[in-house]
Amino acid sequence: MTLIQQLLMGSLYLGICLVVEAGLLVFCIHILRERLGILQRRRRFLQISVVLAVAIGLIVFAHTLQVWIWATALIFSGAIGDWNTAIYFSLATYTTLGYGDIVLGEGMRIFAAFGAVTGLFAFGISTAFLVAALREVFLLEDTPPVSGR
Image 1 (cartoon, rainbow, N blue to C red):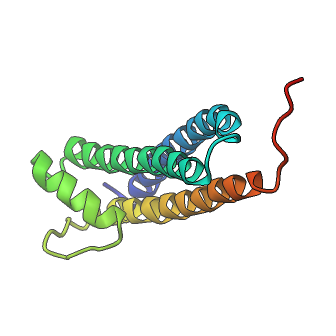
Image 2 (image 1 turned 180 degrees about the horizontal axis):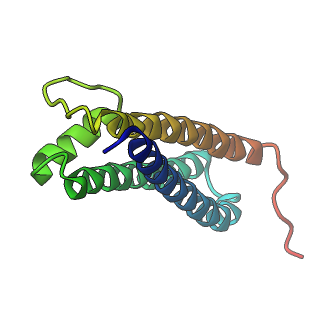
């Protein structure tokens, strides 16, 4: 790929992954808002456990899906020839671990670097989401119970 192609395709896949991340977090908010009303009258341990289980489960799913999106991009672009290597490389890049045992050619390096940028964005967004979700749970402690009106 040329430099411009790498920038455009990398930006496209970055955008797709951020839409996936945002969409799943909005879905998570919907699930949690439905359940938090029910949980308001429950024990604290149950509230925190449910929020963490739902939020972390969907966040892990979102990150896994994004790694698969990048692996698919690498396979279809011809940068990597097999799924095992593509998943491994995508995961190492997405987490910015970057072992360096698999190196792409010059025409794909910038494109692959967008996978690391995607991971940075997604982990930052996920962390902020978890903090906000737990804050909501802790704010419930200060809210008086809902009356039977």
